[in-house]
Image (cartoon, rainbow, N blue to C red; front, side, top):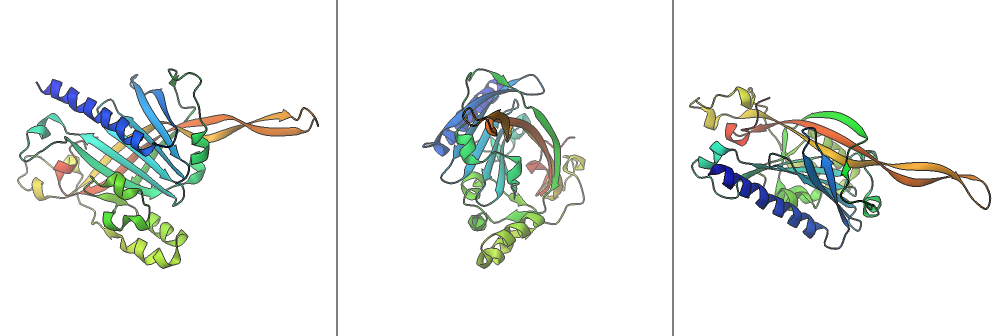
Length: 283
């Protein structure tokens, strides 16, 4: 039955989820955080830090089986989202569909360092009770963004060394023009032109994918504007400082006494080749 196969697929991907992060953190600490989402489901989020490369990676599996990976490259000021979206039932029977049964979608954007905790601080985090279900303290709402450039994966190292290994399975790596200009300005001056040349502009389609009829004979060759909504349900977004007094001098002092946690959702719009690359666009 399809339900049984779907169950196997989800669990195979969860095994892959744990495997990927175990590879990423072979010499670095990682935390497994229990988080309750809006639907009441408890999700496991894996948080890892590589201090030597100044990188943080967060990964979790949604209730629908989609694996969401967020990688923060503090050194190059790049944030990468990679989603592995499980095929829907009707897609499994499409001609030519071969395992694995998921679609990889990748986005690279400018990292705002002030919105996250640095890699060295993440590496020092510990849980007194690993079984506790966590909730974010702040909801940072929704971020809307439109992507109209595709990044050549073979040239992506000029922006970040982590884009290619993370996004190798994605058909397209989406970026924004404003971010390309920022990366070109903050990087090596000799690499500025290389950054701009690494991406190609994509013409914005006239129609939303949800408005393209599957029964339309031209739908298989008609590009459309796709939308994808996903969230990072829990992440460390700041440090907490407490006030105290030096026991010897009596002088007032502040010291690090915890972390602030946040939630953030993203609503991304981007062009795709045809409706088959955006079967979820129904909102």
